Image 1 (tube, rainbow, N blue to C red):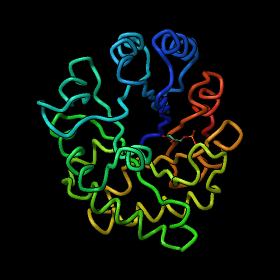
Image 2: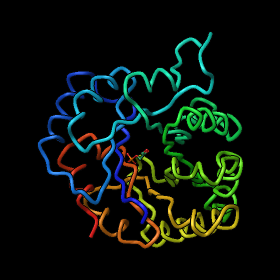
Image 3: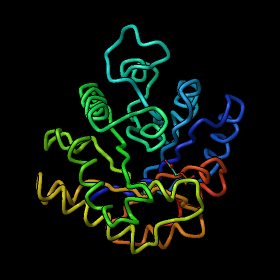
Length: 250
Ligand code: 13P
C-alpha cells in the first residue's frame, strides 16, 4: 500500500523563532497514523527542526541540495551535510528552483543520483507551465521532465522516491488544478512509470499534488484515486490550515 503524505514546503519563510513557534503548534496536534507529515524549513533551521520533532511523527526535509559531494561551491549545501544534522529527505526540482536558479532536467538527474547515493528520500517536483497547458502539451512536458530528471534511477531506487506534480500555473496563484485535472495527470504519471519500470513500482509510488492546496479544496483533491497527498506552500505556514489539510483524507 502506498503512503498518504502531506508535506509543507516553507520556501524562504520562517526565521528561527517562527520555525520554533510553527513546530510547537504542529506538535500540539494529533497526527493521524495513516499519514506521513513532513515539513521543509529553510537550511538554517533544519538542525533545530530535526531536534524539535525528534519524538514526534513529523519528518523534516530540506528544500534543495547540491549535486557534488563537497568542494568549492560557495553558498551550497551537500547531502552529507544534511545527513549530519539528521535530514534524510530532500525536495528536488521545485519549479522555483527551475525558474529562478536555472535548474534543468540534466542537473536534477545528477542531484537525484547524489541524494540516492546518500540513501536519502527524494521528493521530486515537476509540472507544466500555463503556456504548455494552453497549447495542449502538458503530458509531453511532464513525461520529458520524468524521463530526463528521474527515470535514470533503478527500479529498486523508487522506494526512496516521492513524486510531486505541481503545475506551475497553480503555485501561489490561488488557482488549483481541478480534482479531475489532477487525477488525469496523476494517472498519466503512473502509467508512464508502469511503461518504463513496472506495474508494481507504479502502484507503490506516492504521487502528491501541489499548487494552491487549501483546507477548502484538499478533501476533493486527495479523494482522487491517484492522488496520494499534497505538497503545500502558503497554507503550510499556518498550523491550523496545515493540520486541516493533513486531516483532509476521507
Ligand atoms: P502554494 O501551496 O503556495 O501554491 O505552493 C505550492 C508549492 O509550491 C509547494 O511546493
